[in-house]
Image (cartoon, rainbow, N blue to C red; front, side):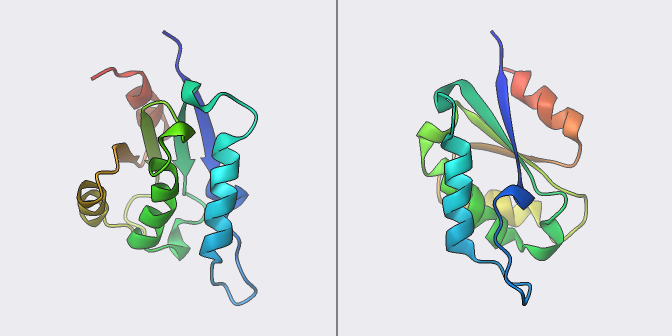
Length: 124
């Protein structure tokens, strides 16, 4: 079975103020719109690429953005992958703890694009 992957870059939906702060409510709304636009969303997996903006986001802030998608299961088929830079402002353990507390679903983090894509095709 073919796997369709929608790649969403954080620079496409993050609203950043002149002072460098992020407008989270506007950003969450835009992310939700992008995830749901122009396709039957149930046919797509989502890869969120944070590599260009990760340095300005905390682990909790990244989680709050991901939760916008996972809170709406109609946004994707089964999986959400996060593509992050290694060692930059992100604590994988804290993120996984937040996901397990909120029963987020199938979300994994990757530092390599090819590994993330391969994970989508892995049925386990």
